[in-house]
Structure formats: structure tokens, C-alpha cells
Length: 428
Image (cartoon, rainbow, N blue to C red):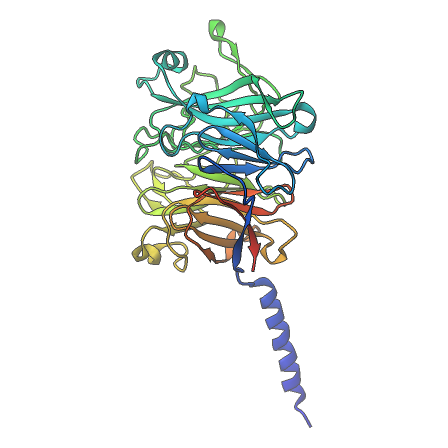
């Protein structure tokens, strides 16, 4: 006769193993499948998205100043010039240029979209933009609103440009530059700390500066600011729950009402989880650490007092900073002091997306991100209730430089490579 306790014990062990395997799933491997193989680009693609109009079109941003539009199910050979500002020479170094496009949630009816690009300043530009700052900055970042052509849905009306926001920039790098509408209907803009190294002006921790911040705008309203003879109307409004919206107006030397979060170095690509609304940011590090942050309203993410979760320079005693959700070092000898000692190394994080598509169920809920220099693609699962990563791992090692990730309207994910190739991410 078989021992019933051994039998019951086996059933219990099987149940435990089944439960653990349900919650402790390994991070799956992925591969890349070429899309738009006949697309010919003259410069590197840095952004791709679909408008919320049901057309199925893809819009691809080329850093030197082009936006191309491709029809649904395109192989790339039908690419058309949607917008061209190449004559403005927005790209003059490496991290600047035309860096993103965002379509208004009501684009299907109002035809509005927004672009972010950089410009060199003339002496007249500096005088017009300078808010009494002691330094004449040679560059600026521009956010403009355009309208699609009334006669051609595949072409922008270039005469419709309305500049809604400009900010002076001291150096040509760390431009951030993504525009994205959140689930709240507001327009988000990630800006780097102004460039060079070490954040020499302390912009990221200074809330009188727009630099080193995540900004949030209401493009459907226009705010009036100032006092007396200095009263003027802005080209946008302030979301009523922005953390500094109730601070007094101080002529540009007070806390900026557009700020949503701060303490960022160079937020290169951010995204909203379409299921939870969580805002994920890949923040590029400097000497030693790369990080992925979960941004919350009013949060301070530490730069330039910290790099990742680690000391960078002395800061105010008692100041509170939010730890990154994920970090990885530039050198193997630092892994033992990392929050994730079993993560592989890299040099420049590229923020990604939480997969919420339907084609690859094994990827559901995984935040997929990568490294520009090494071409690595990683993923992790995050437990929102426990506020921690539960699983993380290497998904693919390839050797092309990753400029950006992208998400289509169905939640499927893509990579844009410096070589000009664009791939869909698929599960093995």
C-alpha cells in the first residue's frame, strides 16, 4: 500500500511549485524583426509613433529635421515628407536636432501636433529670451505647435507654427527632448540639465530652472502671469495640480510652475504604462551609473547630488531623493555595490516601454529598455504594491546602437537603430 502522507506531500509540493512558477517567471528572450526594409533615411531616426486617428500611419523623426509618414502595412517605399525644418539646421552637434513629435489627443478632429527641436541663438535671440540671467546662452530648445494641412493629411501646414515654449541652453548636449501626451491629456517634456559635465550650473536641483526637469503643460488653455506692466499671456496653461503651480510669480526667478518632477540629468526617452499610467524614464548617467526611474509628481531624483542611488557630491543635509527602480554600472568592478549586482554593465541607458501588446503574452508587464553603446536589451517586472523589481534579466545582446524604442497604437514595441534600421521586438 502506498504511503498517503507521501502522496499528500507530493500534491502539496506540486501546488507550491505551480504557485511559484506563476509568480517567478523568468524574463523571456526576444529577437528583432526588420520592418520598413525599403525605407531610406539620410540621418539617424530618433522617434517613431502613430497618431490617435485610426489611420494606421507611422511617423518617423529624422534628427536633422525631417518627419516622414508611412502608410499602414508599409515596407517603407511609400515614405512621404510630412514636415521638413532642415533649413533651420536644428542639429549641429550630436544630442540636439529635431527629437520628437507628439500628436494631440484630439488630432483626428483638430489636426494639431507638437515638435521639439533645438536652435543656435543669434545675439538678437539671446536678448529676446534672456530673463536677466548673468550668462548669455548660445542655444535654445523650442516646442512648437503645428496643424496638419487642410488639403493633404500627409503633410504639415508649415505656416501654422505657433511656438509655445522656449528655453535657453548653455551647451549643446543633454537636450532630453521627448514630447508625449499623458493619460491626463497634458503634454509632458523631458529636459536634460543643460549639458557639459557635472551639471556646472546646478540646474537639476534648482527649481527656478527648467533644465534637468520633467515639465507638464496644458496646451488647451493659456495662462496669464506677471504683475503690473509685466503682465503677459503664455502660449499654454498650467495643469492645476503641478507641484509648484501655487508658488508666487517672481519674474522668472521663482519656482517654475511647469515643473512636474526634477533632479534629472538627461531623460532620454520616457513612456506611460498604458495599463497603470505609471511614468517610466531612462535617465542617462555620467561617470559610473545608468538608471531607470518611476516618476511621481513633485519627485526629486537626485542629480547632481547623486548618480543613480550613489553619492556624487555633497548636498543639503536631510534632503530626500527617490531611488531609481533599476540601475546598472559602467564597470564590472562596481556590480557588487549596485542595487542589482546580477545586472550586466552598460554605458548609456535608453528608456523603453512596459509591453502591453497582445501578440506576445510572455512579454506582458515587462518594462523593456536598452543601452545605446552596447546594444543590449533588458527587461524587468515591477510589483507596484511592493514597490520593487521582482524579476530582471538580459533579453537580447546585439551590436547596433539603439537610438530609441517606440510603441504603436496596439502596444507592440520597436527599436530605432543608428544604422537607420527599424525593428519590431518579438518574443522567441
